[in-house]
Image (cartoon, rainbow, N blue to C red; front, side):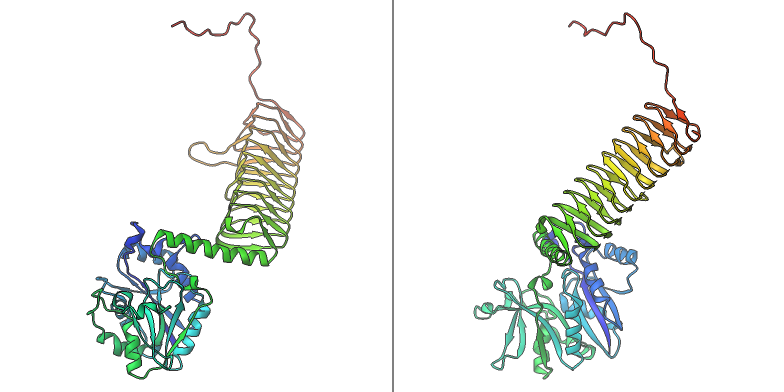
Length: 457
């Protein structure tokens, strides 16, 4: 049976104190809403529906940029969860299971969704509940003497006895569309909030003799919603801990799992060491026996085996060959390709630079738009002058070239194999193979020169 997945994302999230809609706040580098969408997208033969309201333009823009296949429904007035679901109902198929999710509950696994759908396909209302030591703020699950779920009561409407119940409602449920078409028009706003509660359909189901199946998640954090920045931070750390545990189980050593952040996808070999405060963004691949020092950022890059990355190194959009050595304090920018056994030292920046096997840029240099051969040694303070204010040009350096310190290579320029560039040179013309290039002003020593003196006040 087809599944219509309705994600509620119309709330204001006023406790976040933000101009950004709550569902667009990031967790592990991705908006809360897109965690939900990505998980729900794994359900086969399904259609996603998103109910938007507060910040609708921003949410709609984010959906459009993501190219997700989502049908939008607008809740112009926030009149409760039941009212929100009703806005999406006209777009749902005539004979489908409706799975109701929330854009600010990001970490529910799709296996839980599948379990709910399976139960709903048996003609039941499938409800996701969780048992909490402190259920404050949640709607309580009410059961009869046969332990059957018969109703949900919101905290503001609950009696003192009902407030002692520790099993609570997550809001996530699955049910056949025909039941929603019957029950939603019967909802009333006569309650403490003055809203149309979706939770009231539980009592309607019980009254109509529709069986109610309650299932629970493995961890309470899987159904935790985000209403404040504090809750977001707590959920972030729990989620990162799960990612860290999975990495360590696969053969990665983390110096401190509590000081590790993954904001994307990380593929790893074995015997990798990652020091504290490292951040991985986008799609990152790290081969076996790589060592990464503290405070490093790696984004959308591939790191070859046996490579050493020293502290405070930033790698973005790069291909790093095996046995390379980078940092400390190196910045490797997009388009960089480092060959086997290359070395990028402290305070070196590369951008769209290709370095052949065994080449070195050890200190305080900028190498951009450059194609560098094998076994090249580039001295401290070298700059490839690749930009004329309008266009970028390329510097080409052949194998076994030695570039002295404080050299400016003004692109476009070619330096052939085995050439040597004297320190302090400004190179603007081709250097042929084996030549020594010296391009600097002639030294003059002035006899009797007097240093300036400080003026008397």
